[in-house]
Amino acid sequence: MNRFDLTPYRRSTVGFDRLFNLLENQARNSAGDNYPPFNIERRSEDSYRITLAIAGFRSGDLDITAEQNLLVVHGRKRDENAEADMLHVGIANRGFERRFELADYVRVERADLADGLLVIDLVREVPEAMKPKKIAIGGQPNLEVVKDGKQADAA
Image 1 (cartoon, rainbow, N blue to C red):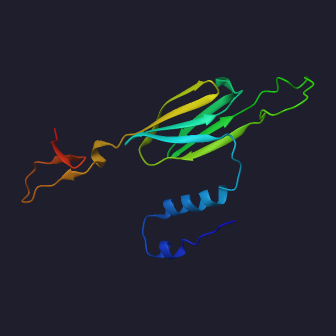
Image 2: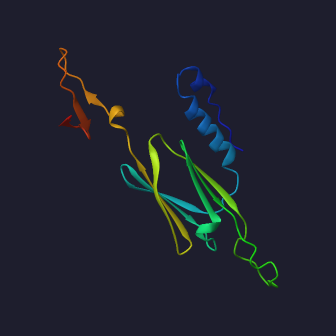
């Protein structure tokens, strides 16, 4: 197992504990199960898509839970072929739990299941209060919202 030591960085930074814990947990869990396979796609600057290949699952077999900064996809497989005399079992017949750490202000927009693929669309929505604002020198109350390097008048 590759282990990296973040102690020197922890000593010289303040407020990054969550980031370091996230990195250490990912390194610890990366040697785990790779089922089901998935893709993560950036569709635009504030839009993402996670696609999981879950052949044989129905929407009733899946639970998608969005918590603060965490998305959990849990699948329960039915025992439909318990009495069948299977000669070869090549399709995975097992449940799974896949966890995705989400950045701040990322929320699940929608989830669809079609053709054995579960597609989860995510969007980042930063609240207006958290967006950068241009502050005028001299105490002028006129604040401007900064977006993509361009200034737009704040209402």
